[in-house]
Length: 113
Length: 114
Image (cartoon, rainbow over all chains, first blue to last red; front, side, top):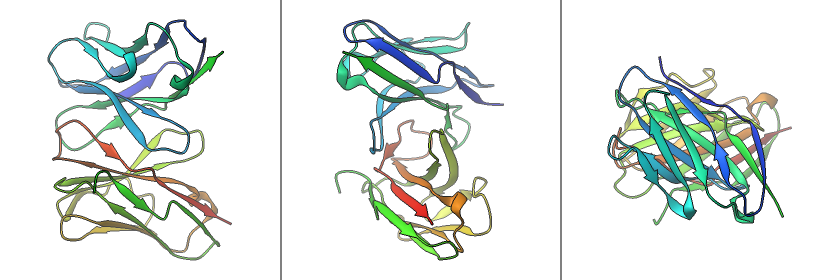
């Protein structure tokens, strides 16, 4: 069975401090993993993706994520938060066995000035 | 077009009315997905198209929901006899092909059922 767990529904950080958004997954196969960001009243935008190449993946806007198979994790990080990072973030798994994408329930990131 | 286009962006309707939501995917994208996002919730999968066929309709919540895709392009999601619990944002996404990994999303159609 496939599933995605985003461990925090809300994360609040001060501007200029590091961001950590946690994601754990379960998949019977070798999955592809993604992080998407959704700003208010907007559609989802791809931040980064892991597709079995390098385990440390760099994305847009200074975000990166590390695929750790032993921990079944794909946590999203950024060294220094910016006000514009305030948004909803979704971790997504594609088990690469069909058409299905499995979405986490999202983490709302607040950045405090 | 440059991106996935959805219309209407906002729709307010009365309970019991039918609504149609439209999605125009990125040109050349063969895979098309519909999701529903309720307030404060994650994304709920509704249906997937590969070309004009829908191999996976497992997410449609009831027989009031239907979708079609014509010409391998535009898709319409129809909700008949709308109920208040249908109020949500309906998101459409397209992909170059199934399992290529990246979904491109439209900005959604916000449906409010009074």
